Image (cartoon, rainbow, N blue to C red; front, side, top):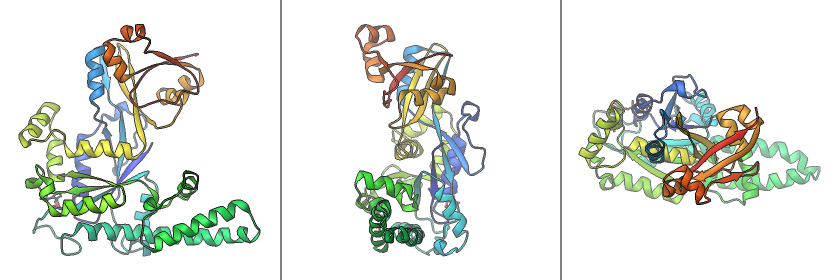
Amino acid sequence: ALTAGIVGLPNVGKSTLFNAITQAGAEAANYPFATIDPNVGIVEVPDNRLNKLTELVKPKKTVPTAFEFTDIAGIVKGASKGEGLGNQFLSHIRQVDAICQVVRCFQDDNITHVSGKIDPIDDIEIINLELILADLESVNKRIQRVEKLVRQKDKEAIAEHDILLKLKAGLEEEKPVRALEFSEEHWKIVKGLHLLTSKPTLYVANVSEEEITEPDANENVQRVKEYAAAEGAEVIVVCAKIEEEIAELDQEEKEEFLDDLGISESGLDKLIKASYNLLGLATYFTAGEQEVRAWTFRKGIKAPQAAGIIHTDFEKGFIRAETVSYDHLMDAGAMAQAREKGNVRLEGKEYIVKDGDVIHFRFNV
Ligand code: GDP
């Protein structure tokens, strides 16, 4: 399963946030893919469409979809040179599919900051630089390896060599790989190198309890937003302390609490949705009288593979995917009406599943 890694310098609020994630926790029994590891937290993906489908179909049971966050502790300055838990840290980052970088924007004189002052841009740059240096080392090694083939006039090696030189130049200017521009074809080759700074990244600005209702008044949040915008990354504002409290509440209490604060959505819910997108994930639904359920798929997959997410037999025996978009189904008000209107399609093996599809798979057993 794809996972988003939570990284950040010490004392920025990672553990507090991760604690909120595990507290809010999904019912693991529903998710056979679930990793059993203290550093992995499963979260349910909040999706209002699932609530609406439940109202429409009135099933016995509703099951949201879920995915995993991984807590990656241990980055300090010098990690790329093996400082602290450096190498271990880098190998953990290598295993995640997207990065959520937590930066401290809250002031609290009782909690020391590793650099002695609150400067989120400094913090971001410390981490990014370690990752860039690690990538530079990987790229240099790779260059040495392909150079032999380049001398033998190997066409593929020549193409890769050009890309590697471009990567090297960018990294030497301290740019993360994700901020460099490549054609789609070249980007595939870049992705294949599994560089740390090529992973999709977002920033989590951790603000204090007092600031959560008006985070833009925090100058540090503004600076993080500007920094992120320059590399096309998203910023999610949270107050980790408050998220930890919210995570202990049930749904009703949670809504009241947020109402009192005057905010419509918790920071954690925003973070979950943004991370899901960042991972390239999307949701389709199954809607039967027994169960209405959301399923996660990787954008771009075809109907049989999507069926295989439910059960391998569904993929092997795939015949057709009876499909209606969520919007069409809601407009029609019921499956039968959607069918009358001609909005229910019979899709075959080549159909590329879309976010919000409500699907009934037909298969041979
Ligand atoms: P980590 O080292 O990045 O995992 O940081 P922790 O989650 O352990 O947080 C470090 C300290 O900052 C702890 O004492 C937290 O209670 C505190 N902290 C974390 N988030 C917030 C926050 O949003 N507001 C305030 N006031 N303190 C926070």
